Image 1 (spheres, rainbow, N blue to C red):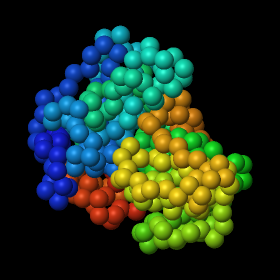
Image 2 (image 1 turned 180 degrees about the vertical axis):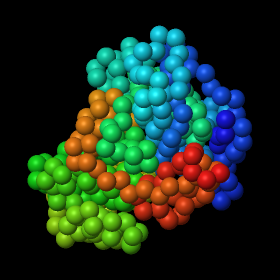
Image 3 (image 1 turned 120 degrees about the horizontal axis):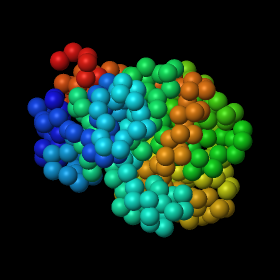
Image 4 (image 1 turned 30 degrees about the vertical axis):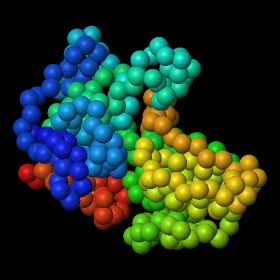
Length: 336
């Protein structure tokens, strides 16, 4: 099968992904084989390719926003049928027995497995996933639309809940890419006012088109105090900027798996009056199921840019250089 893998992590300009043929994977017990129809290009893939996240397996195939059709089933696999469309997300497996798993916090599992990091992901024509960690895909979405829902969407949803936004509250969003533009739609659907701060003029226009009350530069203060904020940009020195924009008792949720170093914080200006900062670590399957339900009811309108599988390095470079508005998606059946 055709695939891309991380040969030697390094600057994206050096094309750290290597493309070629890999043996077709075979599903084991409790696993299913997917014929990949679409795979979202996530900023986590960029961190993996550049070495911010050290690969956990040699020559690992990235990709964890995967829409595919069941093409094979391992022993004892019975949850899905051959030909059924399902999705694979970042969380690919947990132990089920540690104190976090037993407390409904499987996103904090002590020995988790992540698709596209610990095990091969969806930058390929075929992919094997644990059937218990796969999601049915609502019919309202095309393959291309559904792909970014499986990480950008789910993680954005968890970040929104971690931000503790009150009903009808004011939400600030810093950075407006694949995840942020989906989280904004949920917040708007639930009655929030949304204020977007991002350096991209195209992203600011997308935010306004979706219904944001305000869209300004990444370091611009919004016109009103915020009840909650989410930082999607992996830029640590935006943390004090976002904290200063919060009203008393406000919460900032940091959505990324990687963040550049934080500068010193001024306690009086940025943390006092019970402002708080929360991180977001992976997701639970409950998050995924809740998100898919609300996404299909809205329904969400993902903004996507399609690339053929052969252009994986190009898609990552465009993501790194902020050329993509919304989410990039690799389509194995598109082009060559």
